[in-house]
Length: 200
Image (cartoon, rainbow, N blue to C red; front, side):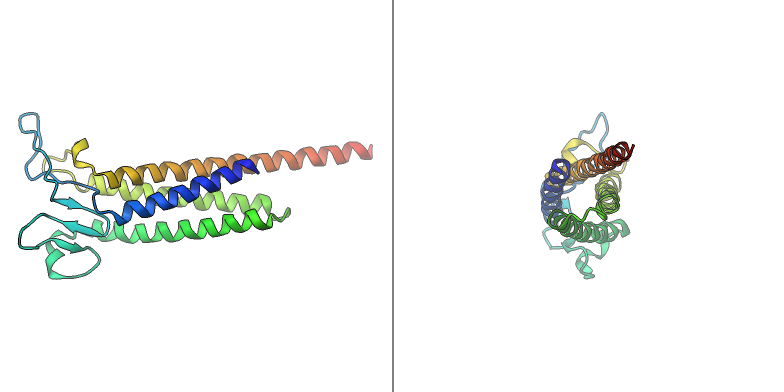
């Protein structure tokens, strides 16, 4: 049971971290100039991209608004992948909350007949959340590269790193649930072996 409890705590931490990541807009700092060996342009800190918010740093307020609000101010800086990432972020957070609710219910009830099947379902559910969260930050990084298709560490904001850490937490949760599922099967096998040995 310790493995499951550890996985649950990691899932709680990862969910909180992922929510913080998507609510903070400092994901990507795009370069205003192409970056190459001769022109190491530094990103402008007033020009940033987030999951739900974008600010291109223009003084007239253009490209400074919420991405999911279909206003003219962000029409030119709202590519399809931004809307897709925002939608996936909402899905990932919703699934994470459902996962915590189901895992918390399992900690409270722990029906023996449901244990192996339910833990397997939770592990697969966690793996799905991991892939969705990983897709989000991979797309945000790859689709916001410079003109010469390069991105540097300075272009990646702290929100992206929080999201990467949250994805790692989901992966650790999946591993913990799988190890706990294996221990349940092993425990069941040992119990059946002991019962059969008593009969003979």
